[in-house]
Amino acid sequence: MDMANIASMDIYGVPLLPFFIFFARIFDVSIGTLRIIFVSRGLRYTAPILGFFEVIIWLLAVSHVVRNVNSPILIVSYGLGYATGNYIGMLIESRLRLGLVILRIITRKDATKIVKFLRSERHLVTKIEAEGLHGRVHVIFMVLKRKALANILKTLKEYHPHAYFSVEDVREVHEGLLSSNGNLKVINPMHRK
Image 1: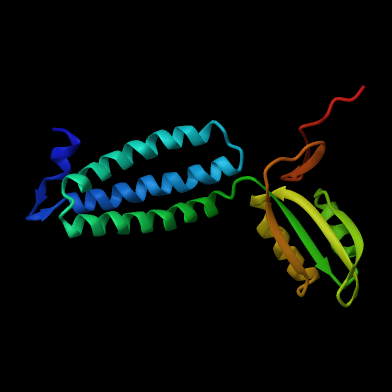
Image 2: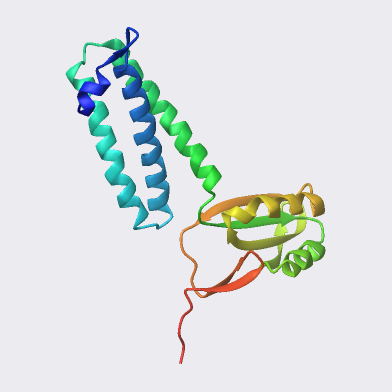
């Protein structure tokens, strides 16, 4: 029995095709969301593999909708699956916490204690003094794994509950060290003579 026959079957009088289309769209859009995120993070080998499965699942779903284009329930199933797939894809990505981020912290309070604590935890921190709207501020920069971000922000709230911070994705890091679970690791070192 092929996929077309399985999808068009009824169970206790309930057609399976709308459910097939709904779940197929959830899978292919979730995979597509992850694929786009992997492309933006430079994961060159994972993205094409995901794309392969994404397009096969999409073709199966869309072929059934095109064959039955006059069926409003299939069109609604297709749309609901797409919307749900986007949401689930984002949930999966937030749970995976892949890649690197740059954390920028700006505080008017003295940042010596938090910098000392972060360095004692083997995080690499750059601190500079700057001029803000209301006078002197301390700016702290860190490149870290996204997985470590939640703990760092918790620590920040303890030391500087009113500090301004921003987080940005990092695509590449060159000639630097990165803290990884308390271990320092060289990333893309330049060989100098």
